[in-house]
Length: 205
Image (tube, rainbow, N blue to C red; front, side):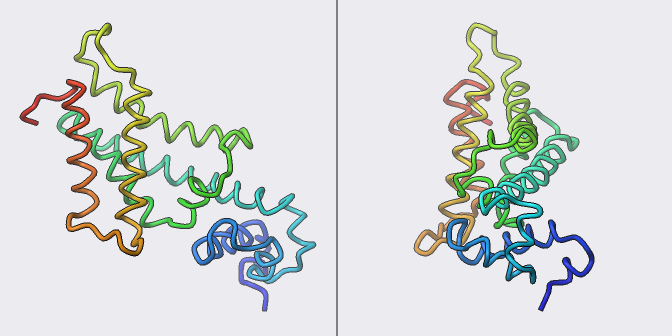
């Protein structure tokens, strides 16, 4: 039976939705393009009207995910925070929230092996998301003299890696990795230790 998305004439989105369901169920390499077509209720030949292959389909799922991710990061950072530190911490919480709310997109973005350089649109939106955390790091370190200020790109990359690690180990329900502490607390304390080590925030913060 064909899916409702196809009946409404939105085959491309129906295929992306099918891809996301299959990613959540089987992982990014656990399904074929034919399975995605069957999940969407169309013939495999119909898929090629919109996508060259499975990687092309996953790349579109990743691009859409980055759009949502960037919006969430910008909203979290742009809220009315009392300090630059609170704004910075908000981006980390947005990362965890996105991973929970959009697991299929998250895997397509970070675990599928799809390069963000594959497509200029994918690259642009991925860098928009990365830019939010880099801007947050830049503002957080603005009080440090320029000759002693750590590169904002380095700081944002470290925090990105830390956020990703917390998600992978403790925020996605992986067997045997349940933490006695909420993922948000793990990330916040880890970020605090890291930032204090760089001298970006006082020891008592």
